[in-house]
Image (cartoon, rainbow, N blue to C red; front, side):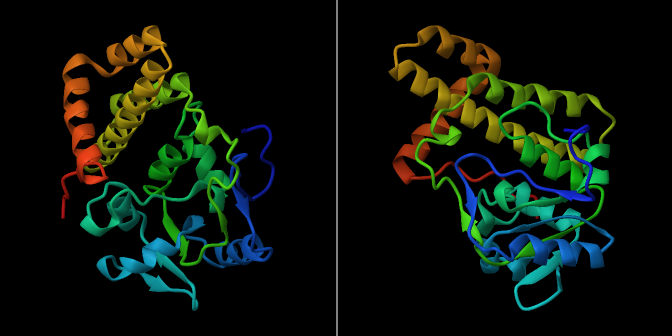
Length: 236
């Protein structure tokens, strides 16, 4: 990636997503060029429901600017109403220089989310409160075929971050991301077990750890009963 990206901004669209708004990227890049303190921009109409819970600056009729630390409150699910809202990677426009300083995209299942958390410590974020495209529009995309190796790499990447000299506030963010990765890995293990791949399921349990696997099993039972995972404990 470091060798491929030669422009000031870049974006990545997975094979099962698409952008319908032909003016979207030009509009977001123009705003980023005018807002030098912003390291990235993305669109998510769902945030319209919770913008009054965080401080923001209005840019125009559909876009706002938030401090990175305020977006982290959304990433960590510190605000109850946000649940698991996070930057939708297929709409994200990233400033290349801070992305390189954040080590770009690690080779794991949630590289966009891990990168975005790192970027939030470097600057502010532009949020477009529209829906310019479609997420998982292609039924044959990668999202339908969980990659256990990449999911496991999520945890390894987050462990590397934990070993660095991050402050307690930053560690809280990456701890939340690890919980999400462990949940995703657990779901993948269940799918493997249904397919008769018990060896892979055992590897997943070993990776997560027996105690955490039991904890996630109870959380999964809650999800089956209530239709959603137990909310991560808010910090605000």
